[in-house]
Amino acid sequence: MNADLRHPLREVFERYHASWEARSPERIAALHSPDTVFQLHDGSAPVHGRAALQQQCAAMFAKFDFALEPLRLFFGDGHWTFEWCMAIALRDAEGSPFTATVEMLDLVTVDARHEVTRKDVYMNGAQAMAAFSRAGIAMDGGIRY
Image 1 (tube, rainbow, N blue to C red):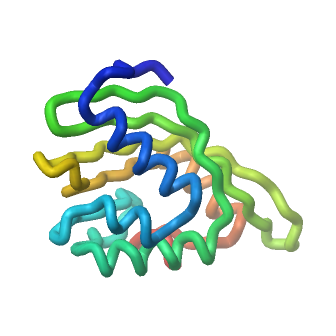
Image 2 (image 1 turned 180 degrees about the vertical axis):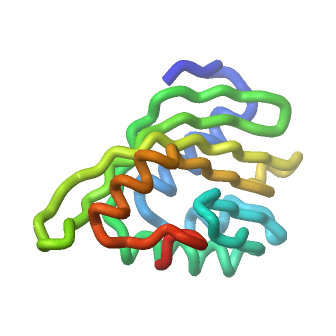
């Protein structure tokens, strides 16, 4: 990753990223503002509030085994943009395991208290559709957890 190591949001990003790597819904939610919004742009509705975010993360981690491969990180005034690759373990229609790779982009807005107020997650649509279709997971209206 290439980002300014001295940027004021660097430490916030490091804690946030570590919480996702640890697959800890509690730690992730604790780094968000009470009125946070989390939007996975896959056709699903946005998630509002810490409690709902924690539940969403718990459901996501229970259903999917995935890892994050960092690619690029950029900081701006009150936000960061994080480009990464998701490696997700799935099973095809015959039950054979496979690992799919989907390019991802996070746009994360942070307030003056260094709480995440909004996180928008964008997926490479073609890669996501190919992976989830092969696994028999419908994406119309968003991925179901």
